[in-house]
Image (cartoon, rainbow, N blue to C red; front, top):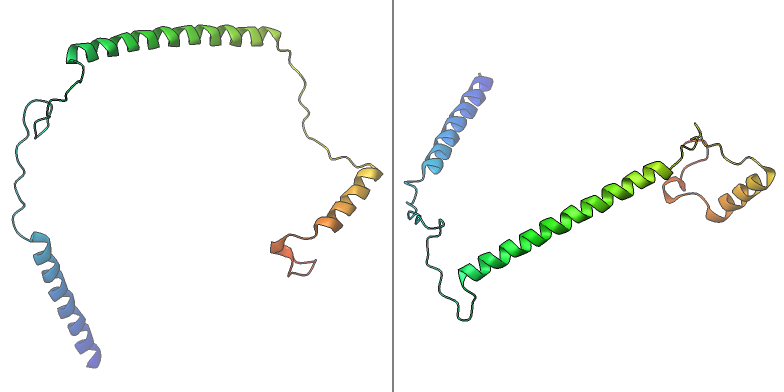
Length: 133
């Protein structure tokens, strides 16, 4: 019997919480936003700047810059493609080894033991016994 009362209590609590969340979501009518102006989508007027160049001069400067940028990019592409072709003609195929084998000479082994003693174990492995890695 107590189990049923607990389940009914939780169910009622859930219903009350859902209703309160619904009331919070509605909140009221959303505020109306002012309509945007047609010119550029800006809702305010931009003041005139003293000493600023005219719009025609700005537009002309932009077109000149874009033309020079296009010329510069075209020249750069040509030099890059020429350099790429030159590298392709000069480059010879070198055989790539399948696997790089470590140096197993006695001197290399001695150096490996010395480095292991000097450097010691890493911090992550210091507190562990040697067998458990």
